[in-house]
Image (cartoon, rainbow, N blue to C red):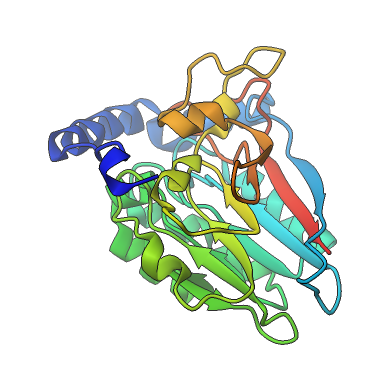
Length: 288
């Protein structure tokens, strides 16, 4: 898709409105007390592990199967109870993926809440590393502080750039693009000089709008929360923002002219500490 056909990013006035809404909602959540009640009642949903398997084309061989962990939309802060992060840490320690990808939106409302993730992100160190992109809530909350904190926790933050995995998987590049709506997404440097196997990491499915001629083997996205509150058939009660976030709301998708994309329901809660028919999840994908 050409640059001229891409939707415009939100205007600064809209960012100001978001900040005002965040402050009001944060106050209503009573410094996490509402989330604590919700968590005790089981209204955060039940953490699940969703497993996928992907086979590369014959000319792209790996030295061994690669287990990829992916989690998005942690939303640390007054809308997500800390007990859920402890559950996720325990799952990562039990499943031990080779590499961990993080899909953005680490905080709710304020950058200082990223410190609530320290025990989670330092509690398990994948042998091939942890890699992250930034989401719209991170930019609203203060991206510089969040990026610095993540790096201090041993996370490689990717903003329109790629990095090869350590040997013997150095034929695989993690290509991380900036947030498609509130960041400055640019596919050129994101994929420049990347390896033969490309894993595209984007906060939302709308990152596809910025690809141009770039291609990937496998993509991971979050942002949609699977609606966070959905009907029994999984249809969101309120549609997620972004045209492709509505088209690719949750699950596995074959992207026309490109590779496979997995869109996660994410993990935490935004605005309200409630998930219905959209349980939090950890994605484990085995690449062979």
